[in-house]
Amino acid sequence: MSRASSSRPESRSSRESRSSRESRSSRESPSRRRFLAGVATAGAAALAGCSGLPFTGDEERPEATASLPSDAVGSAEWPASPFPATVPASLADAHEARARELLDDVPAEPDVPNAAVAAAIGDDREQARRRADAEISDEWPVDALAAWRRRREDAAAVRGAYRAATGVDDRSDLAARRRAVRDDRAEIAAGLEYRAESPATALLAYEPVESLLAECAGYVEPRVTYPGDPVAEPFRAGEAVARVERAGAAAADAEGLRNASLDGRDGAAPRWASLVAAAEGLRGSVSRTRSAVRERTGGEEPFADEDLSGTVAQELAATSETRVESAVDDVRRAFDAGEHATAVVESGIALAEIDAFRTAVGEIRDGEHRETPTESSVRSAADRARAAVSAVVDGGDPLATRLVRPGLEMVGYAADRVEEGYSSARRTQASLTYVALYASAVPAAAEFVRERLG
Image: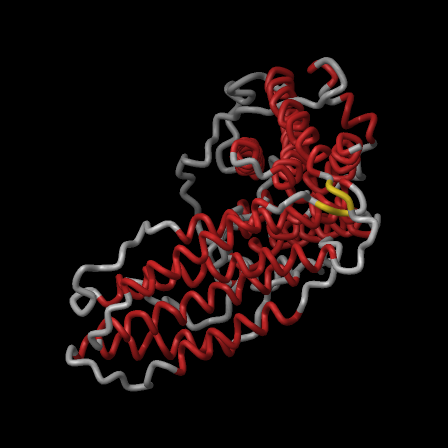
């Protein structure tokens, strides 16, 4: 059954991934020469591949919760969005109107024979309405759209469950709607020529479009089937309806962002070939860089002869390894899916993650990060993380701004976890230290990607 679980506004720690990606430290930005020299043994002019540490993301590291004040980390100021156009307000307005329309179709006190089902639908309706009324805390307009798609999905689940519980069978209508959404998505995808004024602009314009098309594809599949007896399984019916609603919303946003990026741009030309070539070349660069850095840092277990137990260094090593592995996987996934703009962006992120890992290993070997963390050291790490991110943003490069996003997310996630009392001082300091290392690697990674775009 699709049930709302919380009435609090969406926070960074409650959002997924992209991530699905939870959150991807303060030294001066490395020069392009240092960045390339760090992987020179990979050979040729392409950057290459990553690492392996003894502390994996799957390993449990028992930890006392932090005795940190809720403001120990603070927030990082988000820059202007790197999306190269204004995101039309009409897209969010359409999601809000649709969500409220769906909720208005469900009475506050549903007249359903099963009292428990009636109460659950009523609770879900109120939670979905509170979410619809809550302020959206996402930092970029494309993220606000994602929040509204989730709210629209919640509202559709409530309405679908209510209709099923009252004996309305939406099976045939749902099947027709699914076909229509599939057709809409296929039409958008088929016409995707990555038209823009330059390959770099195309990269920033079409990465979110690709993400939306992938979201649509995932939600439109009947992974949750409409039940044979909807009265007996109303919440499953609601979930099936909600997934198609979410898919349709994603397709609409994909079309809206594509159109916005083209509006008034007479010099836009197809950049498909440039992005495909860049994606393929960068995939190889990531793989070679990962292999070269792994070899230079000691293979699978660079700290096999050291006891890092209980130190910030242990957590930093684990964080670095896990993030590199995840980033490399993201490059493979995007490339295999034919998401060329996404593959290029993920390659830039992966290259910066690999360089951050390499630096982290070097610093740990030099005896750094062995201290017992304190409130003061956590605050200092947070200041360094924010300064490193700000240095990237202040450079005024939209591509670097996009690549530094994992660092922004990581600061926000660390702040949320501390505020909620779920993170230790050691883990928090390690995360913030990693942010500074990652952000310092971003400018050179961005420049390398830009050169590959041509």
